[in-house]
Length: 303
Ligand SMILES: Nc1ncnc2c1ncn2[C@@H]1O[C@H](COP(=O)(O)OP(=O)(O)OP(=O)(O)O)[C@@H](O)[C@H]1O
Image 1 (cartoon, rainbow, N blue to C red):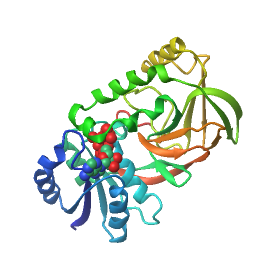
Image 2 (image 1 turned 180 degrees about the vertical axis):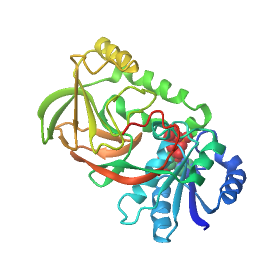
Image 3 (image 1 turned 30 degrees about the vertical axis):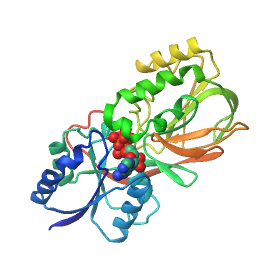
Image 4 (image 1 turned 135 degrees about the vertical axis):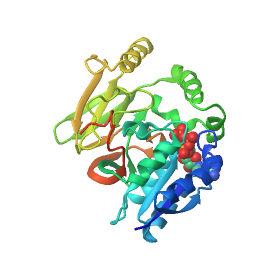
């Protein structure tokens, strides 16, 4: 039976690939039995409204085409609804951390074929106050950098934009004072940054949270204690190799809910987007969303 899909795409994502690909994508989905209508996003927040609207209109499937930013917005439109149809992903953004965590290929034809096959997997969703995330949340000086890169700039120079911004920001590192409370831990610490990971593939740091699994109902929490620039750089280079968890400057634990407060003004980053400021409560919503994945080769998916 033909199913109705709603394709929500960001025409500015990546190198504007979706603009060129749209007719081919629609044709391929149609041939695979998915009658697909589209919504091109017009700016920030639009994908959230479009996803909520698609659920209300009873679509069988929602497809998010773009980068992590688009995906974040779509999930925020879906997470509070009672009925949540499966979510397909066409990873056409500059960064596609989440798609990579699920083993969804960047190749649009292959990604379309996965959506046609509709093999789903239930994944945990992170809730932070009234917002939702799937990859990672965090706060601290370094985590402010991702959403400061304007979308236009990202389109033009892609991944390079992140590195430029990162380098610019390094001398501005400053510690923040945090109070952290979970069922198991209570901490009061001066920290450089804290990260709450849901998946294990984050911002090019594939081994940042090696224990994180999208289906275990737990967050992997990483806290980098106050340190100097040399120590900071050492931890970052260890993190690239996945060897940072035993560093004395790193606190690591798993938990299902975590409360974070601070006397400082601390901005939050949710899946690379600005996510408000502290205080906040993070809760893991186990198996909250069904995402279409590759049945055969989920190399990086851990269960
Ligand atoms: N028509 C539009 N014009 C400009 N920005 C848009 C438009 N539609 C959506 N956006 C915004 O663009 C942001 C970035 O989108 P997305 O993540 O899909 O692409 P990207 O920048 O290539 O990838 P990433 O953010 O993963 O690096 C989204 O957060 C969204 O709010």
